[in-house]
Length: 206
Image (cartoon, rainbow, N blue to C red; front, side, top):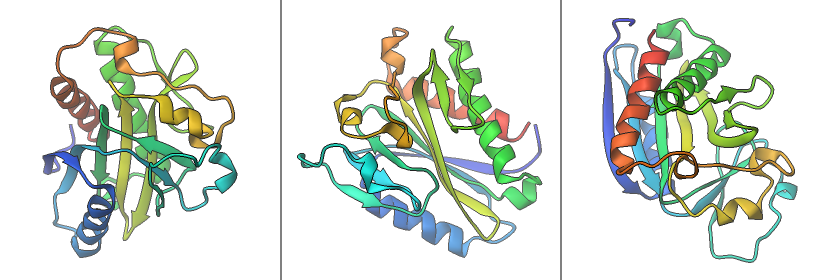
């Protein structure tokens, strides 16, 4: 692995807006010497709409789940308890990576994790994220500022997926989601979160 220092922060369940502002602040104030950080957490229910996101992809607004327009790429997605969020605060210039190459490495880390638990998965160059049998298990959306990224990965583990029915997932009509608990039996989401994070980091710094 590339010899670059990084930190992992396990933040538990956090407020989306607060965490978003903290990511922006971290990125604005970091220097070339600042360690990369990976923030591992879950969010209370929230829909987020990317910078180019179109409201037509919101199919049902008759609910109490907040809808927040944010500064990442991509269309609309849903976050909720039981979904593993890994925010990737990475200096891509220091790594010598393009944003596209970083996305490929993030996808590969997720694919590697799923392979380790016996699940075949794939990324998609045309629609970033990771899929199992054509169903989306993980989404990726990033913002680049000062040659550094924030936002990151959402991985469906053991959540109520009903709110995904209220949207065109990531802007694709008819795209279905799947989650880890539909595919394998596991005891502890935190244990799987640690494994997933480690696979992603190994892929990023390979």
